[in-house]
Length: 237
Image (spheres, rainbow, N blue to C red):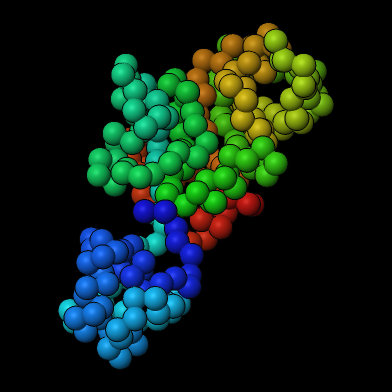
């Protein structure tokens, strides 16, 4: 379920928090089955705040909050809700993947950190070009880099069939042909195309970080977990 905004009408609240339709919610209210902060209410239009206590037939009802996950994407999976040729990352989550949106897609051959949520505003904060949320990758190349390639990434340059140059990216050597690269945009196959423009082929690509969220080292490929509250805030880091 997507995130909701308070205050809201009582019948609308019950519609979100239960399986009741708005009409059945109104009937429950008229039948004195609904208590707000301990008092029986009869008005379906009563304004409910986020901290109000609502009970139906003696049980507390609440609206599930937005959900946030990180997933360790394996090779061979696509970041899509459905695909006729390949399995998707949502297939790995089963029922928990229902209604989730993918933030920061990876191509089929790229592994690593994928974020998912049903909070539309949060998803936008990850993928909006204006936010320039940094994504960090580990790339295994077919040869080592030199200072000229590092400088070219830092300055930005035009890719094939594109007029607008890339934004400055941070490229750091790790060991031999393995490097770390951080970019603040998400063009089609951007990392692979940037290296290709510099005469290097990416043999393996693995995303390790989005904003302030780092892939949990305890997650095996195909595994996922919920984000902590600090991690949810970390996309802006």
